[in-house]
Image (cartoon, rainbow, N blue to C red; front, top):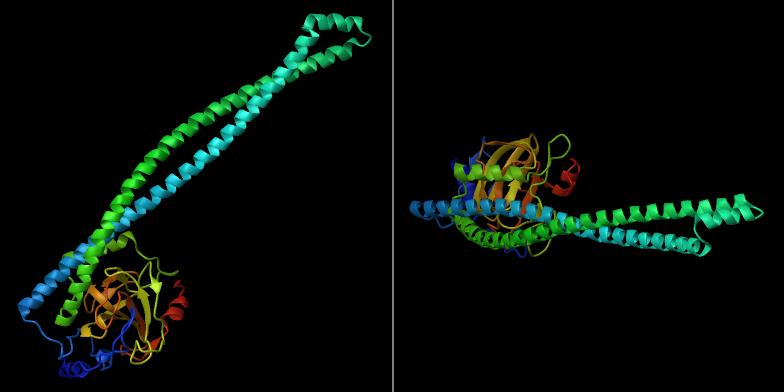
Length: 387
């Protein structure tokens, strides 16, 4: 690091406006100095208390362990959550099918009962008028034998048809009953599995909540100590494998995507008020601590900083005149100078620096410096990204 950059960083030590809500306080000056050629990792401002090397190593080890725990539990929570959602959908479909089968069964039973009653009425009428032989004798004796025989044959055919329909309805009722029982058994099994997965999901959620709390604490210690470099390769590898399970889909052409998934937009670009020294220079994405943060596009990690109001922060260069910043991170999984692609995980979200709640402060800039930003939301939407 050049002496001029250290001096520029040291000059920012006095800026510390207080933030309220999940947002950073104004635009820190740590990035206002002219950017050095190439990628750099910045030390904290000179006024930040520097720990002994041994203490900083311990903080780095704790940060790596806490990050790994959050990554693994987040992966497990995602897997269990997806399994739970799938089983829940299947169980609900099973219950809906049971209701439909019961309704169909009742209709078929009513149909069979009605057919049997109608066939019975015909049989009673035939009994009262006598069997076939008396009818034939009556037909010969009458003045219109063909009409009598035709009516009798029609009644017989109708009785046979009604009896056949009744048998069909009875078979359909039996088939529906068998299907209903089988569906009920499968649905009971799904309900049992759903209950088990729900308990597992809650258990992992409690552990993940505790792990996020620890990561929040350790990451703030790490930012203050100046240890904001890339996590160890083993942790980064686990993060990479976990991120591929639920990767955001870039816009058509695969060029751009969102920085996080499952978020709530909080403080927007250009906001004014007591929360910031000046106007808000980015868009805040409210997410839990330890949420995977991804590069919105292909580029190169230009710089990593920590210890200022942005906390642990990263700037990615996407080409001439396009830079993105990701601030208040808890840990990073890529290093300065590394090439990244759209949707690649680059960090874990946090609440480091001048922040009172977990979120990702995201900026789109024309230069690496603060103050050159544009509104990130329309910028992303203009590139086919839904925000």
